[in-house]
Length: 294
Image (tube, rainbow, N blue to C red; front, side, top):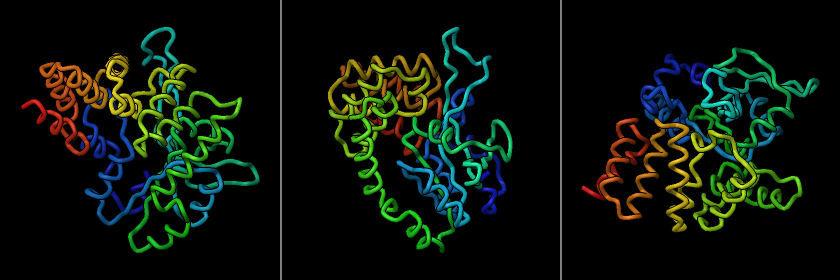
């Protein structure tokens, strides 16, 4: 929907067919969205950052820039994997307007319909599990304006550092929950502080995460791999594959776990599975992994 505002004439299927062709896993990462825009809608720029807040959203909207945020939704009960399934899932919302008098945003929701409203407080709650990720598109000639609007967050490293500092403060609170610890881990992983990140992810998992968390976020895979915790990597990717069998990311990192344990045949099969799920896997990750054993 956001692309249509900038002259693009395709649809959601066009995007998923290129970056996520398997219908059993339609999760599209922000990196993949940026790749799609830059290669298929080259007249546009796309940036994504973390640590967003209500005031930033309002500032962008006031300057006529709709904002995409990653948020929580609920799956259809028919998609339940069992009686204890929480039906928790990730979903992108396009925010197009705000109303301070009602403390609510107007959103476009590809699942539930156009011109819906959501309160500021509900959005904050639903946005938090994804590190307050936001995505904005703009024409290249307006880059200087975008830099002004984002201020220090224009610099991706400064943005991540300020978000890391914020989440580090939050986890010291008595009210810190699993998502706070998970976000802290993700921000540590960005700076390759993998051992610390792995411990933060441990805490998040101990406190309890949604069933499908690892369908959408893969920081723990990186953290466990790079901190040498291979058994934990294998256990977690096994779990992730059991929840989302057609997740190429889960198969990729399961393969790295097998490779690290010396099972090269198993690793190759896992990477071949990842490649078969998504031949357009971002940055050819599965193909590059297979070169380790071929």
